[in-house]
Image (cartoon, rainbow, N blue to C red; front, side, top):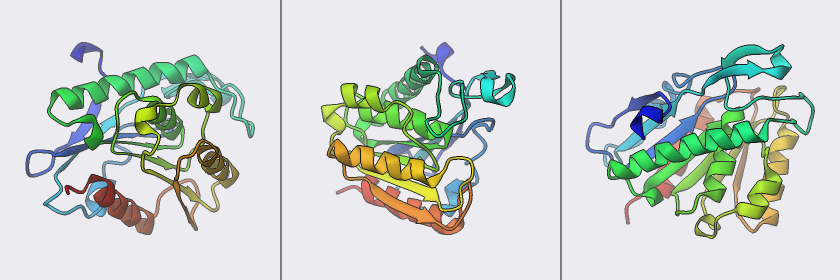
Length: 225
């Protein structure tokens, strides 16, 4: 299985990891995109977390003129519905599931693994986490949207029905409109999830205050009783 895993940037804690965060980047970026966020999360030494930042495969993206770039799936039309290549997204979900399996093999139980994603990576995080058959620790989605609502509704996992979910979005996002973030919140609430919703006065990006809030949320969902 290891030969088929996506290449990843990994940041190990100073002590043996007791939890893992698998964090997917946005379209055209790579695993290094959120590497600088880790110290700004201000996680305590008593919570040693491994961060795994996978690199999406390179593929042509239709809305970008067919240019080849790191992408979790093809985007076919840049409209409010975000018409996408669903099979490509599901392929990426399987690759993330393989990374979850590797973390389990390395001694991190599924219930100590958080899935996170920004923009296009967030759409993969939604599908993977809400349909994963084992209980996870949490789902973090940033400046993103649900691209596979029908699939999630049909295949969502009972194991993750009460999964902690944090959804954050920039109020001035001109790439993924904030309306798509609120649409995701409404969808999850309609399926009896209880997502936390945060907005920030920024564009399609993160700010320090948002990162610090994410750090507090991670401490809450990964705390050891």
